Image 1 (cartoon, rainbow, N blue to C red):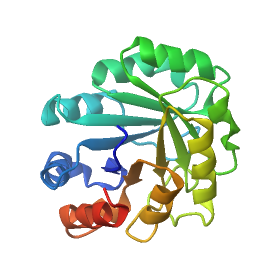
Image 2: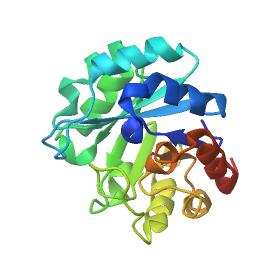
Image 3: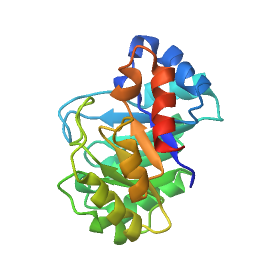
Length: 216
């Protein structure tokens, strides 16, 4: 996954039409779908869990990468359930567990790509402290879709790129046609876009516009 890819996030999708909306962006070229999980503790909202993930996996088949982002406390307790439900990769927050290396290894043992995420107030130095497959830089505070990109976040993306030399660098938060070029220039290759895609009247066209802006 070294190529630049725009990753639609179902956090902003209409869950009553989830299958149809995911089909729209896949038809437009998406090969990765971002699956945000919130527990009402690490972040205030509560979203979806393994049952919805299993249904989505059954709907899209094996060819689509489902990128699970756990915004939950003690994520190590839930890794096996999300892996069994069909996650391709599982990313958890460094702030949510005292067992970062253990959780990375647990995810890999389940056959999934292991990612570590940091909130805007957390230093990117954590990415240089353990082996990982993906480094996720949050460019908004986690918990809600539709937030504006935090100015200057591209500098942190560049730092993550330098620290996690062999890992995928992902960004999540406020990504749209205006912000995509800067994070790509800073070294990100996976760009999560939620409201900019599914908040649009035409998600497929919105997805393609961000792809074009990112040079993907």
